[in-house]
Image (tube, rainbow, N blue to C red):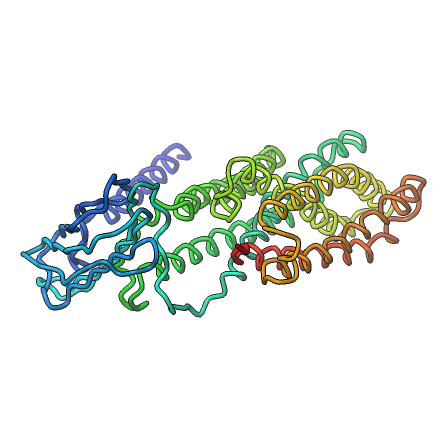
Length: 441
């Protein structure tokens, strides 16, 4: 009987999966539009001399009078002449250009169904092409700083929190006796929230960036050709990699929820994957254009920050979850974990400081830029707030931790831990603003 029920359940699951695959694979005729098939010069090409013409070939015939093409040179000048349209082929004469990166931006209307489509890409003349430049004067009602802060928060909750738990709880459990972690459910919930926030904030951020490059209106952006931006820019490549990484984190969190026997191992894997996803933030940031060493320093800076803040979040969740335990057991568990987090925090803070100093020296052309540029002023504000968190952490390590080791109740630490966590969340907000600010000069 049970075998028959299991067989029918498997059959229903297979049928549902097959229907989903068919639905995803079925071609859509309602959304037909003129998509770019080939281009000469093409996306990402590096030419030895400036081209005299640009040729774009589309999947459908386009309406001549609505064809719009611009080719922006290295200094922002539009070199494109009036486009010549022959069916689905658009030829654009170009004025003489100079060495540098060029941005091609096009907008077409299909003669078949009247749907508009748009896109942008870049090529280089004697240099490697850079990311397509944004449309001048175009803004969107989404703060990129908020999106960056949500991505940092996701790395903290899904990466730093779970990784610190793996480094702290397993050794503490061996010392205290084999017992399930009281904060596992809360940790899974926090990590899911972090991963979902980071996944969606990253997607919105990428689409906003693509919209600023391609232009047009939000209503027609569904037909924008963003593949050259996704595949040909650091931001697009980083978004692709981090999207798959966050999906993997969510899959591990679901597996941890439904398999209690392997929960801690799966949560540790999810934490490491969350920290790996943070590489996308560094890959798409300003330091990535400064060379490999700057990229590694920025990534190490992000990782250490995530472990520092994530460790405090882990302690807060543990303290709340342990309230239901007997007082003696609660004190023993919390004290053991606080002492271990404190030992991990010191090297994390050192890496945060060293990475921050190195990146500041690389990004600032001279000391005066600290007070004469938006980037420098934001950096000063972030450094000042971070030093407050460092001072509070130093107070914990110098005075509070020895008292805890001697048997002082853990409750004496709660208020200052909450204060340190609040300060660090403010640091993350300033870091998000800094990540969206162009370095001076």
